[in-house]
Length: 147
Image (cartoon, rainbow, N blue to C red; front, side):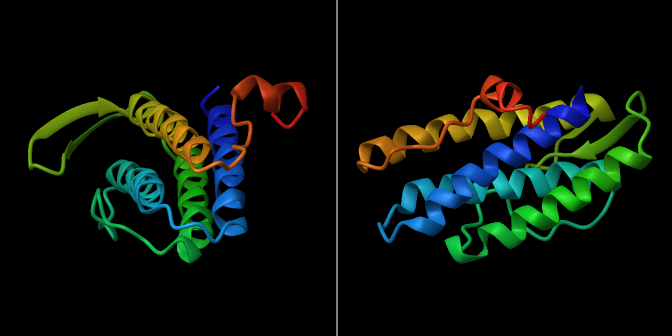
């Protein structure tokens, strides 16, 4: 199920990416929030892999770099899923330095659920800008046999 949810997140993020690349509207808050989604995905997989962080949690990226960051994130996420035991507990630190211990499966689910939450916020922002938002619901992709 986690593998399918990773695929869903990748497809749904791609729909958001398409909107960002198709508009010339200045939407700093939506761009800040999608940067945060990308950063969090990177941070969670880095925690799972015990690898160095490249991004800070609220670092803002130019929207022109969103697609390449997303592609790299999902490459790392899929590689990590292929080699990690989902029941393994990993000790890591949050952005404030607090230490936690969670199973790999829990960390993946946090990463993916977090992305869904913020995509919903971004869709609301797009609507306020008069942009027809993409459909990013899980069931939409299931009905299209993409998952």
